[in-house]
Image 1 (cartoon, rainbow, N blue to C red):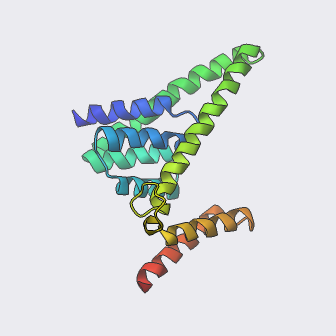
Image 2: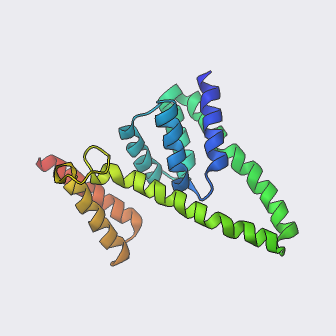
Length: 187
């Protein structure tokens, strides 16, 4: 039963997560945390980190992580299969449609209408990721006591390194990980 739940939950995520892995994060949160309670919010933030650091698409890595955490290797396979199946079907169908009808204004209109939805899904994912980093309880609060100062400083430092100094993202992630490790060891 759990394998079917994992498969169908990630089938839904795979079918609705237009815009890539970050756009899938709110959907994964809704299924894995809110609906089925397979993982905690703390596990979800770890999931994002692990999915970023491991090779492969974020949504597929996330599906594998949740499935494995929930029901072992078979759970990971079921969730991963559910996540990739819609993409395989959609890409095959869209490739055929696009090559056949790419010059129609209707096709261009459809693609243009999808852009704002994709941007909003990515923005939602970004906010979901930032809340536990900026606030100790993971919820927006105007109280100074709830601010996670180290997380905010690491975020601003990473942003500066990436945007101003054009540091390689992998090196930036390693530096942030080292900084966090040093801070924890010093405490």
